[in-house]
Length: 381
Image (cartoon, rainbow, N blue to C red; front, side, top):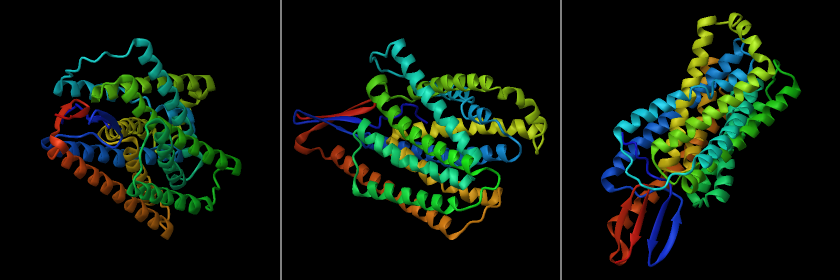
């Protein structure tokens, strides 16, 4: 698999006018198949690992896990997997770009800012998962789609077509429908106050994720200016390193580290399953991250978040099997709406791809297409 990920943005010059298009990069016709193979792989990573990590996270709490800081740490501590992935990706690709790389101070600032945001999102997510039912948590989290669209509009000048708006509307309604349905369910294991805290934290995490996805796209375009997969892996890995350090400080400062030994010994499934559960959560979150970032590069933050939103209704279905939740009519209808929204979004990308291919093969006015890594220039002759 080629490790030179095409930029989600491209610069197009025609008749001495420059116009930035936010949808997707222009692939060469012969590389179009490989691009969609990569997208399919990233979609699989997102859908499978998102459900797995959420279910395992709830499994940790259901069987005696009580540390929200540990629940946060396992979302981040697997970042060495990203370094391994980056190392092997470099073997298969060589960066021939001679663009000036950002300074150490600039890179450090980017990693610290995004790392702090990641740590905050992860902690709020852990609190939400502790206090809310799985279906409620996952489908409130689906509101990140609206937040990403909002932030992308201001940060990345995201343009919306009727099909995209339809997709966002359907996915949002799909999530809201299940949230309303699950809010009426009894939460006997937690107090009303903790239940409200769970909702607030989950909404906060959703907004933070939307901001992070849009901010990453902006950073890659304006700051790093180097659209390769290794660059993205560096960004995500180092921000995870920063976030892990922040969470470790919180773990020791809160004193929860003292309870971890007793927590492992009293874990209902045993000591070995306790360790395996936490390790599996750590690995699945990193594979999920690879998928999310890959989709941002191959398409856009909104498309990446749409796939994430499509995967969220899958979690309640898995919860029916694992936690014996009831699958009612509202949940089934929500899944149908999510699939409909996904199809709408993919169809818009198909139309964009078809239009770009027409421009590429039949340039207007005798234009010639000059393609560089990460962007394409159309110059009049």
